[in-house]
Image (cartoon, rainbow, N blue to C red; front, side):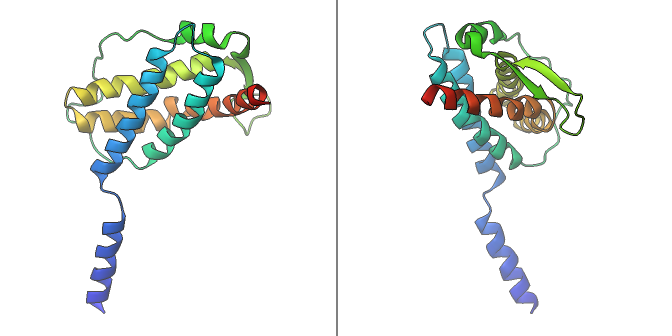
Length: 175
């Protein structure tokens, strides 16, 4: 009986992707999203930006859920190099389709706020880019820890919040 339990546990472990593979997939998605935002300019079509975001953001969110639980090597107080906030160029691309309304707290009917898609996409960008720089500097555990924290809080709020207006705008453009 004990042998069966050990064999069953061993088979379950083999089916689960290893933490390194989960992190590698996540990092690849982050690099793709960062590149989309970095390469966006006034010639970028709204539908191209929205389509790329609609594809990558839910994958990043899902892959982020599979990141391993780690502790940062040097503590969470890392100082990142200055990264230009892409909000202005995203405002220019999104133009009249930037502003939207949402219920900030879905359990409080008085929490309607106006916000912008450019702000959401910029905040997601920065919350992914800074840990990517840490990752590229060889501080793997620290980067993973920061991504997980960001996705559970600030980055996750903006990422999930952006998905509904992205969906509606794509539907509008494709119709």
